[in-house]
Image 1 (cartoon, each protein chain N blue to C red):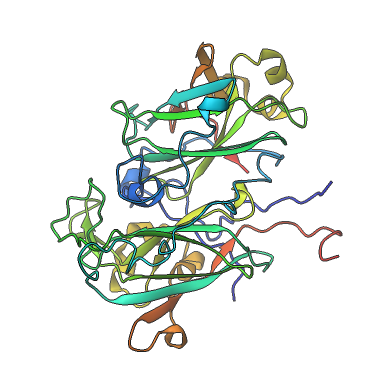
Image 2 (image 1 turned 120 degrees about the horizontal axis):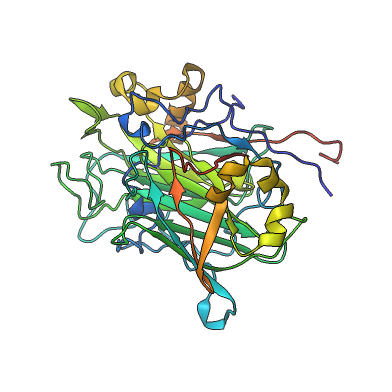
Length: 235
Length: 177
């Protein structure tokens, strides 16, 4: 029987539940301390998606929702690696993404921002990491958009990511930002992350991965929670 | 590269067409639903419904609930958003897991919502498992007056209600796992 214990959230880099500058946290943040739970089979396992059949275009948001033409906007490659804190790659794990279109408009019915929808862009996709933990999406660079948090509030360009990893302690939902975005300095959601963690949410411009005459590229690596080393490891 | 954890960010209000598209009638295949088992060939199916309440006791309409269960025999996973039910309930169809490692039967809940920068974890236990619940080490570790927040109440055979309160007197126990 293994004696692996997974690390807790690293509060040096993880945002708190309550972050009053982001107003919606005020009525939704737990107010009592979390109860520490000894990890059991329930926590040390999680859904595996190996037997799911992903669509051939699920990872390509520039093509997976075409109705009558190409989506409008700047095509980009978003790629990287999924690792844990021990530096071990996480193979064959599901990554799901969703985002606004190039005008800053979401397909979601609740989004009432007065910017055009793109009939050829849904803004949702998914893929599995390969055996070395690598992933790659093709998409359209998302636009900034206004939101109601405070007067003249605008979200920086971002892509939402959902990851599973080795077990339910590894679960991660986050947002990937773009380098040099002037809105980052004004965004309460990004700024909710302690200063040490903020750079970890900004992708890197990656000209080497750009595809000539087709798309620029950004690299974004993920680090999921790791575990204690045990004497049985690496045997 | 850094081996620091990637920080979490909120799921936001617009997750549905990416994570629960068919439930919300978007044209994108959904991988995971609230139908955790196939009812046609499953005995002992149970239905769990509930709402997620904010600090003013208003039901939250843009939360996403995930349920994981593993009793060593069956591993089941479900996902449901609270934005399609007229009362903003979540609804899951599954089977009750067996007791494993001397724990009482339970489901693990991962909860996401706009206004939550990092997800929360809780557990669903079953009100009709009185004997096993009394011996469950996790439940024993929870303050007596808060234990009820982890208990799905049996409404009728096979039907349970489990409400989640983010704040206040009835605040659900959330776990640091």
